[in-house]
Image (cartoon, rainbow, N blue to C red; front, top):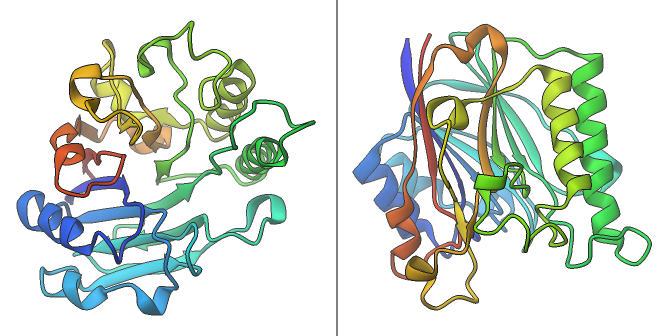
Length: 262
């Protein structure tokens, strides 16, 4: 079974439903994982997506904030969602395809502006969230699984536009990178995007604060596709669809794609 998958922080699924529909119509991934849906599940415009062949959805939502959803052409079963760090946020949902592959869709907390948990509660919540993810993967080693989402950390030097300038900026600080590395190691997760594109600057997010975002190109790779070692070699054709960031009234994230032959 071969299938294509995309992950995209949509920054309001209701506001940007036409953009989701455009992506589904033009690119037709078999599975699309969305983050920051900012909608209760019953308010997600599923009819728009169903008309395009996406008959299945598993999701967790809340009004105005957070929210994760998996849209699928393929039959998919809801296999849970965990409340890491007991934040009461809709930040994780998991669905299982008929071939037994479990897809985890995550929206890790952004962490606020100051990388110091003593003065910034949100940064502490982010670190705690990642710690609980790590502990879960240690306790229950994932198998035949794909993890995607906005993890809100750009781990490598070439995942940001200027490594030295961003070392004290939330999303690229050493403590965040270390927490993410421990989480990845705990599950044995393979970074599929970087397996396929091992070198060179690669970004999936560009700030709204930069009106000339494309030319300035001050981006960060915050959105990730990982897979467990038992299926990592099946992943291929990774790409970031940068052009989507330039669509009218866009999200500040671009979708990240990968395909799997299983």
